[in-house]
View: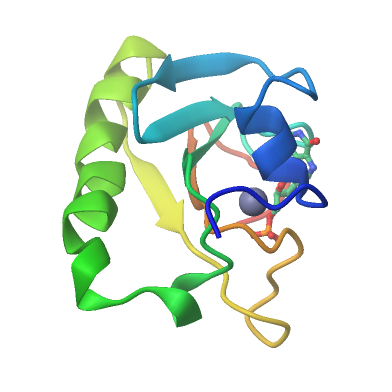
Length: 115
Ligand code: 5GP
Ligand code: ZN
């Protein structure tokens, strides 16, 4: 499935729900988390609906690589110069709340609310 009409991040990708975008290309969208844990907290998502890491296959390796490889550029552009943290939550026990694959990137001066 490329687009799940009930998925909140698919709605953000489609522009049906507003977001503070930081980057967009044909395959990826990055936007600020609505409830940030750190001074800078962004989410990098594939535009295609992938439910979680549990659904990723070797065919997705370029996409996953691009999600990670994009993050240093975005953190630099957002003024984060002293380090940052990546998190991907998978499934219920992994603490995943939104069932559309997303890479959290946290940065900015500590203390952070969480993480
Ligand atoms: P998870 O726990 O699934 O890894 O993280 C989901 C994240 O999505 C949470 O940090 C939450 O604040 C964020 N989030 C949920 N709904 C929205 C929304 O409508 N807009 C934005 N920008 N972030 C959202
Ligand atoms: Zn989705």
